[in-house]
Amino acid sequence: MSALLASALLTSLLSPAGAVTSPPANAVTSPSTDAVTGAAGECSGVASDFDADGRPDTVVAAPYATVGGVFRAGEVTVRYGTGRTERLSQGSRGAPGAAETGDSFGSAVAAGDFDGDGCADLAVGASEEFLDARRPGEDGDGVVHLFHGSPRGLRPGKALDVTGFGRRAAGDRFGAALAVGQLDGDRADELVIGVPGLGVGGGIGVYGVKGHRPYTLTKETPWIAQDALSTDEFGATVAAGDFDGDGRDEVAVGAPGDGGQRSGAGSVTILDLAARQAGAYTQESPNVKGSAEKWDHFGAALAVGDFDADGRDDLAIGVPGEDLDANVRALDYGAGAVHVLYGSRRGLSALGSEMWTQNTRGVVGRARYADRFGTALAAGDFNGDGDDDLAIGVPGESAVQVLAGTRSGGLTRHHNVLIPRGRDGFGASLAPVRRADGSPDDLLVGSPDHGTVVLIGGAVRKGSYPGLSARRLRPHGSGPAGSLYGYALLP
Image (cartoon, rainbow, N blue to C red; front, top):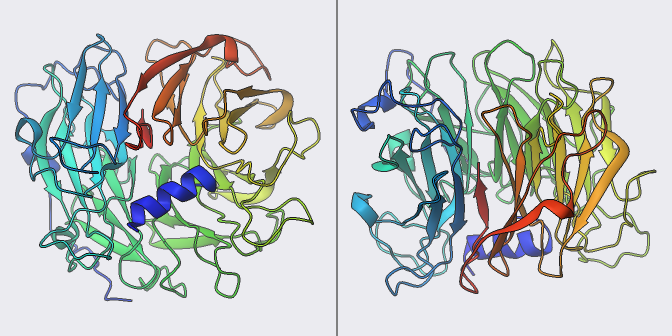
């Protein structure tokens, strides 16, 4: 069984020591050398606007799609704001590589302005790609493809792999997760790449930081200095946010398999790359509610948003394996929980942190084992009041829970909504569609096991009323059975 298939099964049922390479201080890599020329001055600067028309575009990944008769090669579908649809795969329209069996192109997607021209660019992970001959029964080495935005739409760029980050390929699953952040204060965005099979315990790759060549970080990096086990999956999830409000993002790295004796309890590490400082959170950390248990998978999903509108980002952490029933059986999938840690002048803090479940007083619904509350998370201003709200995927219940943010204390249980839909794993993937015109954000919701994606429109509702409801739900595409259409979504 491939690692992506195992991850997909966890998504539908639960969620999705080598040497350390440090960046030479005097080395410079400029991603702009790969950009398509002629776009400067015409781009809108709108997040996920790949064709410079001022409207956000959406991306839906189907990493198990058959491409040109090649099984599970994978493809992504780009829907431009004009209504035009484009399908991308390896080898398509000049993209590097070729569609090969089991590559899983679309295992992760992310958008950012990697070349600083004002047009959004697209990164696509193909985590099961082998750099040489396929090794049956082993995890893929992985690659990440870059596509550059322009007034004509996306144009293929380079392909990244772990060898360009100073490492040797060894079943690392490079590109299993992707995040975009502003890590160095320049015009261009930087790309954080999850590499959960790197060395012992996993790692991340960092691409595009001014003054540095691409480099990797692991739990064994001296300034991170954490014990590493081969099952940790450090880098299975990644996110970037400015938790201290200094104008530069920090990186959150999920390791849902971490836990030592409590295998699979999970952890999340916050990395300040500029200060070279790291801090880890688990359910055993001071002021973090709950307790670490086997297979909780703390960190299986991450979302960054400003839930209290204080100008500092906050972090939501999915714990889809959390057991809330004393009668739960061994290896049953969890009812699930979500932890929220708030930003401060000193960075992310567990003081005042929250733990949300469907057993929380006032939260609509009833917690049941196998709900997997927290499998997917998305932050967006869905009600247009200036602070972010939190959407929580509950695929075992085939539903999405929405908590409103407030300026008076962050997320609130008041007026929360539960949006159910069928019995197709609705809520296994989520992504906010951020609007450039100041109108409320919308929400993309995927059911990858059934190959469907819907869009829930946001609406102005001031205060603690979420702007999302089942009344504003409409289809946003579908794919063939077994393709995992909707496994990853953008923006």
